[in-house]
Image (cartoon, rainbow, N blue to C red; front, side, top):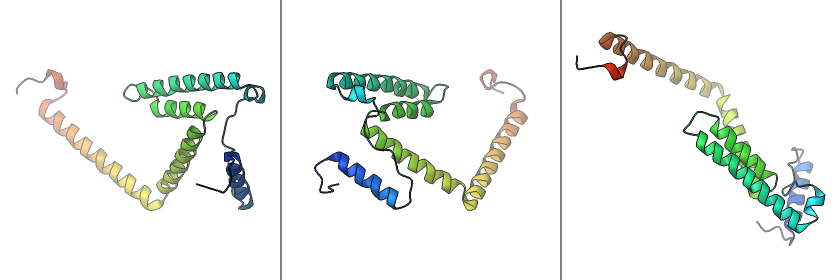
Length: 151
C-alpha cells in the first residue's frame, strides 16, 4: 500500500489518526516496544531482537509440541506470537488479524440461529455416541475392546 509517504512510520501514524477521527478505538502503534535506551543503541537493540526471537521461538515450539500431546497448544503458540509481537511488526499484524477473526467467530457463535444449530448437532452427536455405546454393551458387556476374543 503506497500512501505517498517515504517513511513507514508516517503511514502508521496516519492510520492511527484516521481511526481516532472515526471514533473507533485507536490501535497500538506498530513497531518495537523495547525500552528507549535499548533502541538508541543499534547493537543492543539487535541483540534484544535476537533474544525476543529465540524466546518466542521456544514458546511457539513448545506449543507445537503440545498440539498432539496434552496441554494448551494453541494458547501457548499465541503466547509465543505475543512475545514476538513486542518486537516484530509481522507478528503484530498476525495477532491483529487473529484477534479480528476470533471476534468475528464469537459474534457468529452468539447468533441465535447458529446457537440452535450447534445445540442440535451436539445433541444428535451425543445420541449417536450413546447408541453406539449401548450396542457395544449389549453385544460384549463390560469387556474392554482389547480383551474381546472371537465370540
